[in-house]
Length: 207
Image 1 (cartoon, rainbow, N blue to C red):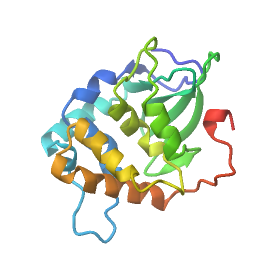
Image 2: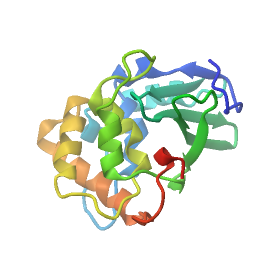
Image 3: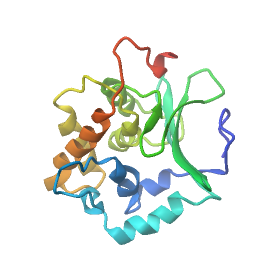
Image 4: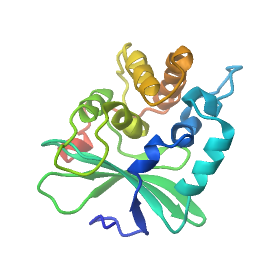
């Protein structure tokens, strides 16, 4: 796979991995805030078990095959998520693809925390529900929201966000009984480091 504007490694389509047991715990578990809570995050929060999580991590972290997850959108920029599996320099890179432009633009990376430019909750929700039927990639709104969630950089997340996120987690296989709690842990961590200022331009607008 080739993505103009990103020449760092051997890219392969990774969308088929979303349905594999262990994917969401690999992708989101480290983003759950533990803090002073007695409940330590575990793969079971995402409907996975440790064996599934360990097995899938070998696929996700393969230095010879870097999984790519495409979140294309209709008439607006889309997002591409790339596992950057360089030896000694692992991370997850986030790119924007702009309509009418041939090259993608890297806006952020995740290496234990987000560095770069994020998006507001409203932008993430709009992106999740605007799949492009003519472009290859993830179409399911729940999976689209969860894939782009690490980009959340917002000081004004609505109270209903945890409920919406919990529903997305349930759709992706998380236990219904604990999905809301898992969503709250994720938002607590992501909002703790939020740097967004409402006066800043969004990367979606080219800012």
